[in-house]
Each structure stands twice: as structure tokens, then as C-alpha cells.
Amino acid sequence: MKKAIKDIDSDTLKSFASQLKGRLVFPSDATYNDTRKVYNGMIDKHPGLFAMCETTEDVIAAVNFGRDNNILVAIRGGGHNGAGLGLCDEGFVIDLSGLKFVDVDTTNNTVKVGGGNIWNEVDAVTHEFGLAVPSGMVSSTGVGGLTLGGGVGYLSRKYGLTIDNLLEAEMVLADGSFVTVNAKEHTDLFWAIRGGGGNFGVVTSFKFQAHPVKMIKGGPTLWPIERVEEIMAWYDNFLQNGPEELSGFIATMIIPESPFPAELHNKQFCAIVWCYVGDPNTFEELFQPVLDLNPVFAHVGDMPYPALQSMFDGLFPSGMQWYWRADFFDTLTPDITEQHLKFGSNIPTPLSQMHLYPISGAASRVGAKDTPWAYRGAKYAGVIVGVDPDPKNADKITNWCKEYWEALHPYSSGGAYSNFMMNEGEDRIKASYKHNYERLLQIKKQYDANNLFRVNQNIKPS
Image 1 (tube, helix red, strand yellow):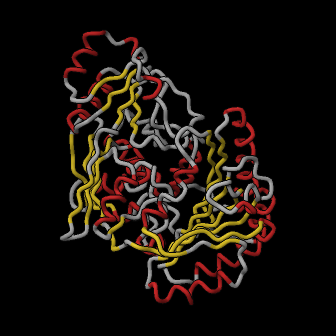
Image 2 (cartoon, one colour):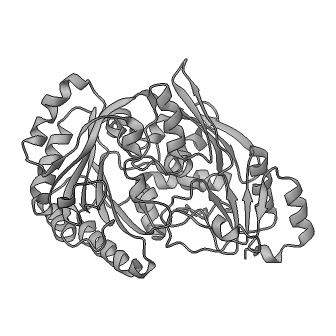
Image 3 (tube, one colour):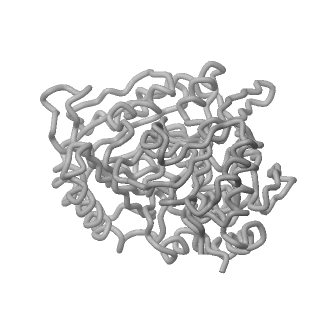
């Protein structure tokens, strides 16, 4: 039985506070309600204590405090997790938001990043050097959570997933020890954290391989939702047979009132948001088949890579109501596209939508056992999100999302990208790691046999 923070005596808490450079935040503090907020406004958890860590030594002290006092522990990086797995009721949150730095080494195009950074902070620095690290689709996402889950995004077809570009990490383990993991040191842990989530320790820094990306061709194209079956079938063939320098996700969505033209507002569309990192002189010819499909809106052109990464940040500020469901897909058959027409024609709120992210190209050439990401053979990581600013619409967006997912799931590959999952149970976690689950379990037993790090997509050691 885990203790609550309220059951820990004041002397123990004072002793812990004296070990920290950062501060503690209790429920009685004026900053508590702001501190406990995360990206998903549907999450309303009340931790008993936050440790706002500023150094690795703070993290070590916090891990030791949580373990020695038998408290439920959650680790929060960017706070972007849909299921709110950076928080826990009545327990203890180790907050990494004070561990921020971005150091670029141009001799080998690597970048070292703090465990509390978010991606727009990384993009801003690497862009100055004409570099980018493959990450996700929204730049307000935390580096830690996205990386530990896998990291699928605009650059995946050309440069692989985020985990495929992770060279090294520094971690605090459940016993309080501090280790460096890479291809030569603690190789089992290095394997496990490249997709196995936060099950194995607290990552205080990441070292990535960056790539020469500065200006790209990118932006959205739109077709009426009535054409979604046609466009999806065409997109599947066009993208999979196109150069890896071209990527882009396909979506069902409602066009918001800004920044699109008024005649598109509040109508339902099939959208593709493109990203091209190849020779700009070949783009016009490559892209002509897209224009030949007569999109009702096409705004694709030159832009800095961070502009594409942050394009939708303003539409999705922190604090919205969110509900997520996800699956991998090996193909886009007529049975699948029929469901996208049905549910894409009945989106419940203006910000709710469905995305399919391609994971072909470079991401598919990594072996299915080389990292915990088991679905290297799948073509797409799909996610359905119900989103709305009003808590009164929470049930509406949740029900639409679940019904959409239930209609598509029989045609899926069976598992999902862990960063897109809610609290869906142990069987769903096993399905998502598939043949890699047993190895993850053995590493979990070795490094965290008592399951200190359990507030996550948990691999249970017993």
C-alpha cells in the first residue's frame, strides 16, 4: 500500500526540501492549482506534492525520497501526455521543467537537450545552425515524453523516428544511481528507453543526431470530405511510391475560423499537411499530381522548418479538453476509408480530428526488434482526437472518438503508438509492444523490480 504525502512527517519533508536547489509545491501553496495543470484540460488530478527539480542532483534526491517513503511517484516533463500520466492523485510528482538546456555540437551535428525541454525550444536553437532533430507534429510537446514513446513526425520518412536519432541519455534509476546509456554503456537500458516509455528511470538529458534541415516546402491542401475515400486511396499510393524527402499526414477535420479563408470556415474536409526536405528545384514537378486533384485550398510553399512544426500550436493551446484513441494501420483499404468518410462527415466540435502519420521510408528500415517500437512494418500511426475548450462537451468528444476508433480498430494492425494512448489496460500495452514486450519486462524487473516508475503505460514487473 502506497503512502499519501499527508502521512509523511514534517521533519522528513523539511529534510527533503533542504536537499533541493528547486522548490516544493504543496496543495496549500498559492501556486498549486497552476502547477497541477497539464496540457489536457480533462485531467483533474490532485498530487500531494511537487518537486520542481532544477538539477540532476534534485532528481536523485526526489527519486530517493519517493522510493524510501513508499509514495506513488509520477514524472512530468512537458505535461503533454493525453492520459495525464505526468500526474497522480495524492502522490508525488517529480517535475523536470527546470532541467532545460540545448547544446549544439556542429563538429558532428549532435544536440544535447535537457529532460524538461519542449520541442519548440530545441527547434529554435537547432534552426540557427541549419539543423533539425526528427520529432512530432506539435512543437509544444515535451522532448522527454515524445522521445521515450518513439517520436513520429514530419521527418520520419527521411530520417527515422526520434528514437532512431537518440545517441545517448543520462538517467536516474529507481535505486537513485545516475547512469549514462548508449550503444556501448548499459545497452539494455538504451534499447528499452527507445520506445519503452518512462518505465525504466528518469531521463535528465538526451543526446540526438541532428540533420541538415532549415528551409522546407510545406503546408496544407484541402478537399471536401465527400472526396476522402478517393483522396486517401490516391495518397496511400502516391506517398508510399514517392521519394522519402516527401512526407505529410492526412486528416479528417473541420477548418477553423483562422487563418483560413472565410468560405472554408466550419466545413468538414479531408486535409493533407505536406513536408518536403529534398531539392527545391524538383518540387514543382513532384507536387503537380497533388494540384491535378483540384484541392479547394492549397497553401504549400517555402517556410522555415520550425514554422511547420509550430503551425498548429496556436489552435491547440494548453487547457483544452482532449480524448485520444489510436491504432497502427498496414494499409488504407476501402473498408477503412469508408469509415473515415462516415466519421469525418460527423465531427462533433471544430477542433476534433483524425490524423494518419506515415511511418514508412527510413522509419520502416529499422528492425522490428532493434527498438521496442514493434510496428516497423505498419504504414501509418493513426490517432483520433476529440478536442474542445468547453468541459460541457467532454462526453460528446469522447463518445465520437471512441465510436470512430471502434469502427476502425478491426482493420488495424492491433496495437498503437504509446504516446497516443489513454489508460487502456495491460492487454493494450502488451499488444502495442508485441514481440518486444517480454524483453521490456525482463529489463523492468532488473532495474525497477518494485515498479517505482508505474505512472505510465506500465510494464508491470510482477
